[in-house]
Length: 270
Image 1 (cartoon, rainbow, N blue to C red):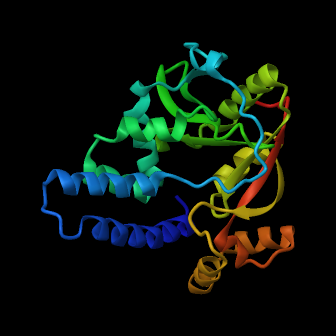
Image 2: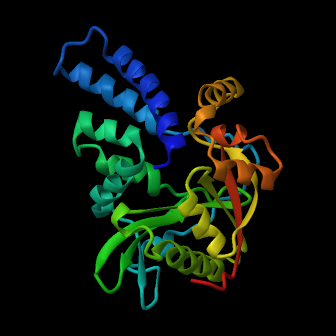
């Protein structure tokens, strides 16, 4: 996790702690009422509000979700997610998200299947677990977050021990080219943290086009963005200044936004 996201998640975690404490205030520790209140508060934290009003009909991936294998080659196998992947998925999320570490710290593994169902198993989304064919082990997950938007956004995260080994480009290429073959969709987007240089190189390696800045998932209001920028100017690096110059934006804007890439299928490299 880059320093900018770490700092932003620290600020977010403070707010979440306050919300959780207020939710259980006055309730006896260990009581069913306290447990129910804590669960309700945690549920509200992991849910995201879709603000895109330009909705389209979702794509039905139910046939693909029922298959044991979605796509494969000599290096990678992509298997549609099932509830049995819950612990693996949450384990990856804990590597990159303070919120998930907090949830597991407070509830153990009791919510793992619920988290996986909410994040990856909705009708509007389609996700796969990526396996290394040679080692026969899970390396990460990849998928489409919401097929009800005009341009489908992909998400990918790898187990930290498998980053920097070429799995990212291979997974993206294999997944998107198969989605393109099935659906005919040619254009996809990906959001990448401004300080995550390895991910930026991964997308550029497969021909993704950087089109500008986009809102992230942590800083929502303009007030939050401006305040975060002002408080963290020291996090701006030379690489970020160079990137900002290339994009013709103020370097401080890279603190409060993420990069938006576009990918066009079929991808020629993977």
